[in-house]
Each structure stands twice: as C-alpha cells, then as structure tokens.
Image (cartoon, rainbow, N blue to C red; front, side):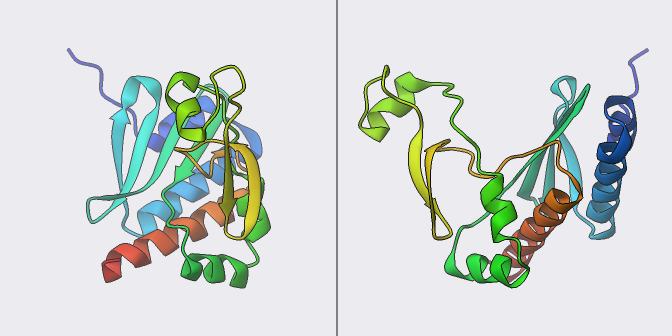
Length: 167
C-alpha cells in the first residue's frame, strides 16, 4: 500500500522547531486563509509551490532544520513604493541571494567574465546596488524570523494583487 503524503503543516512540525516552526505554521495558515493553493513540486525534496489562479506566487523548501522561501516578485516602481510604504525595503535587501556559484559555465559568459573570475552578477534591486548576486533567484528567505515572514507575506500579497488585475 502506498504511503500517504503528509500535509505541509505536518512536514513543518517534523522538520523545524521553536520560533521557526511557529512562524512557518502561521505563514501556512495565512496562505490558506487567503485561499492560495499549495502544490507539491517535489515531495521527496520538500519542494512546494504556492499558487494563485494557477500562477506561482512563492516556492518553499522544507527539510530537517530548514524552511526556505523564494517569492516571485516583479521588481517594478510600484512594487518599490509598496514595499517602501510598508517599511520593508531593508528587509527585502537583506535577503538578496548571493551567487553560490552553481553554474559558472553558463553564467560567467553572460556576466562578461571568465569561469575563474565569475562570482555572481551585479544587480540593482529597487534602487540599491548589489554585487555577487544570483541571476535567477533574487530574494531568498532562509529560515526566516518573524520580520522576514512579514516581508515574505507582503511580497506575496503584492504578487496576488498583480495576478488579480492581470499585470
């Protein structure tokens, strides 16, 4: 008989504890309250996608000792104003993903660097310059605290509003 897959809340309880567990469970409750859909991307690797009307809003990875989230953000002028009005720009900037570098053979030529000298991309994110960032993932919340979860939720709310109005 096939093993029944656990709910994401059960995975959280089994994987993390303390404040992270509390915050992660509150985050998932918020996701459900806002009628967002949680789908399994890769159950064995703890990967989930949070969607609204079939469109991605956030990726989540849960495993032993970690809860990571990557919100799908549109870095527009309107988004910058929204985050600034919520006093969340600093938190967003604090969570910019550094380049691992996971694939310098692909990324180095795009950055105009050799594989040996490649250490990430220079990006400007909502008015602030960053070096050594990932080209594909801008914002990555790793084991977020309460403030990071608030920033994550705000980013997701903005994305849902964008989907609702069709932008």
